[in-house]
Image 1 (cartoon, rainbow, N blue to C red):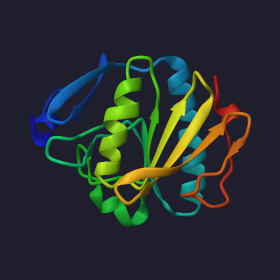
Image 2: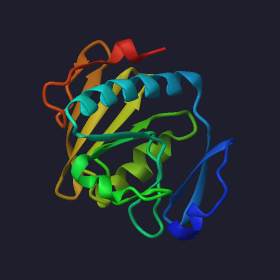
Image 3: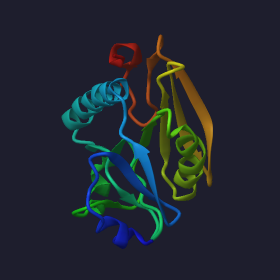
Image 4: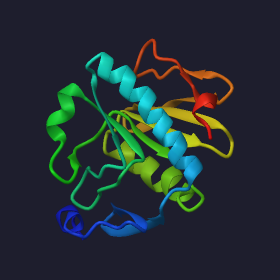
Length: 175
């Protein structure tokens, strides 16, 4: 299936749908603790970026990075210079960063399939939030792979390298 064909599918309220390597991947909708953390992180990033006119923060938005790859990160940010990538049904091109919050049914896809694909498609920053282990991992694209990982436990403030001077109290975002 192509990204264009995928975007013509009817939306699903029961499942999260993504196109990964030409195949439609279906995952259960996230649980309340996942959604709460996601919403709280969205608010922090929205306030920070909006005040500074840095770009836009988006939830669960399709991102076409190749004709047969249209993932939907849990959260993403687009710098102002990249807002022209937003189309009616999806973003065309990479985002800065892609954020995935691990869920029971999507850990392998998030940690392996999407992790390698995001690097391959040039997404400069990738954050993985592990609510079970209370840690946020920030990866920076170095060449064609993610390197220089920063692993921040929830009992320490997270200082995203993408947003100098921003400090996020991860524990305060939990359910």
